Image (cartoon, rainbow, N blue to C red; front, side, top):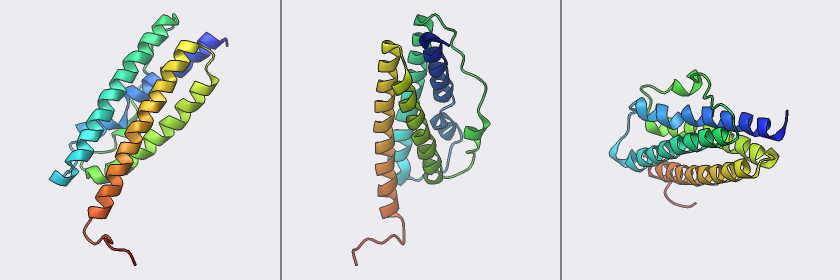
Length: 153
C-alpha cells in the first residue's frame, strides 16, 4: 500500500468517526439536563459542529487524493444514550473523544502526505481544545454537585 492509499484509509476512518460522533447522538437523545448543565450542552453542540466540519474536510481531502470517501456503517455503540443524563453522557463522550485523539495522533505521525498530515494535525488540535473544555466543565459540575466537598481539610 502506498502513502496515498494509507492516507486515504486513515482519512476515511476519520470521516467515519466524525460522522458517527457521539456528540450527535447525545444531542439527538435529548438527555436529561438541568439549567446548570446548559454550558455542557452548548459545548457538546460546538463539538458536534466541529465534527461535521472535520468530516467534510476529510472527505474533500480524500477526493483530492483521488480516493472515494466512505463513511462506513452506523456505529451502534455511540447510540446507546437515550434517556440518560447529560452529566453521565459527558463521561462517555470524553472517553470516546480521548480515544479518537490518540488514534488521530498516530495517523498524523504516520501520514506520508503533507496536506493530509496538516489536516490531521489541525483536527487533533481542535479535538484537544474541545476535550479540555468538556473536562473543565465536568470538573466544575463535580464541585457544584450536592454533597461535594467544598472546603479543604
